Structure formats: structure tokens, C-alpha cells
Image 1 (tube, rainbow, N blue to C red):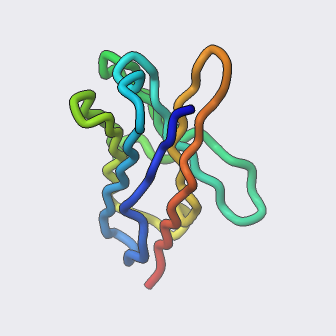
Image 2: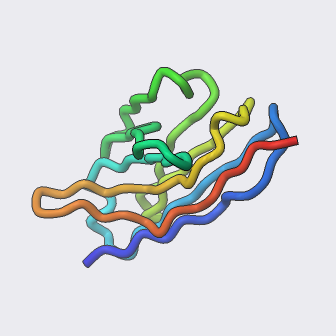
Amino acid sequence: QVQLVESGGGLVQPGGSLRLSCTASDNIFSIKPMNWYRQAPGKQRELVAAISPGGSTNYAVSVKGRFTISRDNAKNTVYLQMNSLKPEDTAVYYCNMPTRTTDYWGQGTQVTVSS
């Protein structure tokens, strides 16, 4: 069983920045892809960013150029740097580790973009 613990959410004004972190409890982290999802009230959970074990990245169109996903395999941690935040980025953000047998999820961290 892998535990994923997120941190870094909060309230920020439009145009501001936040950095989310997600730390895994198992060294299997280094050989697994990692994802960040988000879910806004009344909407389906959506994939925001993904990173391979080697560091290749992909982004949703809505965040490309504003968000950056990165990982530190020595710390079992994946990050999501979010810049130029917009009110529509308001959501609960979840990190995700997909494996062959199951998907592991963090508890979620709230990001609210509001003036």
C-alpha cells in the first residue's frame, strides 16, 4: 500500500502562484508515472499534468504554459508549480500514482483562486 500525502494548497489572488507537493511513502515512486488531477464543484475529475519516471511531461490545454510538473525521485516527491492562476483553476487537486494493479490517490488539497 502506497500513501500519497499532498500539501501546498490555499487561497491565492488571480495572477498569483502556488506550488503543490505530493510525497509517496514507497520508493516504488521512482519507477512510476505520476499525475495531478483536479475536481471543481459539480464537475468531473480532470487530468491536469503527467510526468513519466524519466521526466517527460504532458499538460491539459487549459494549463499549458502556466503549470509545471516536476519530480524529485530522491525525495519520492512530485510537484505542481502553478503560475498565473485564474478563478477557473479553483478545485481540489489530487496526486495520483497509477500502477498495474491499482491507482493510488492522495487526500486532495484545496486551491482557491479569488480576489
